[in-house]
Amino acid sequence: MKNKSYIGISFIILVFGILVVPTIIDRVQNGNVVKGDRLDKVESGTTEEESLVKIGPAPQFDLTNQEGNKVTNATYLGKVFVIEFFFTSCPTICPKMNQSMLAIEKQFFGNPNFGIASISIDPEKDSPKVLKEHAKLLGATSSNWHFLTGDKKYIFDLANKGFNLYAGENEKVNGGFEHSGLFALIDKNGNIRCRKDKFGNPILYYDGLDPEGVKDIQEDIKLLLKE
Image (tube, rainbow, N blue to C red; front, side):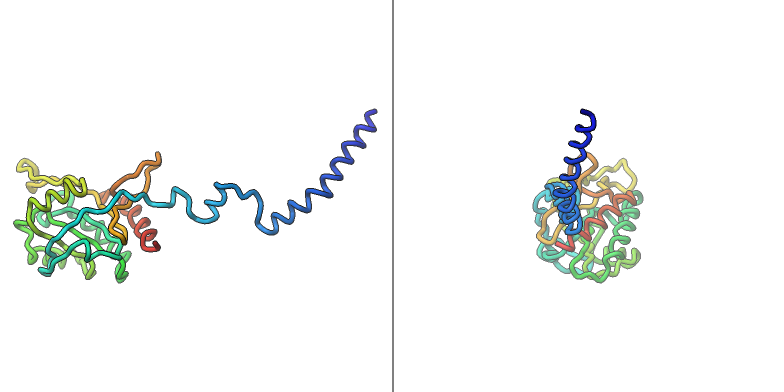
């Protein structure tokens, strides 16, 4: 009985080899092995992790740059750009933010589809002339990097109500102003974009004081430039 069982099992294995194995080999050779939904996404290079979240349209703005020229959202239409709020006499985080932005500028220098907007929260002191001198001292040379000034209330509303990036006056702090060290990333169509954190939540903005945050935004700028 045992011999008959062994013979039966051997026969099944033989039939399986004849009928199935050639099919498997053919699928391997033609790259058709197990194409489920998850593998299809990986192969196409469009995994959810790689895509950037669209937060919504960036608020409209109308300001004056270091050359005395009007700059609006339309100036950046068709460009990927980064926004920061700062002031030239800032003794705390602004120098670090500006250096981070300078590193970003250098990586994408010469690309006509990339720009930067550095908006002063101390426009009473930061005139176009002051901003132009600041840009020179910083070493900013891109024609698409605009240092912007305007009405103080307008700029504070733009920061706090428009972008939800805190900016305020405080006589008790060094420099007289408080503000966020975060950068906003805007796509070619004027939408705020960002990556997700490790829990799958949108980070909203990028940390301009952290080398990792700067690295992240540089990577995501590259993604948006390809769109």
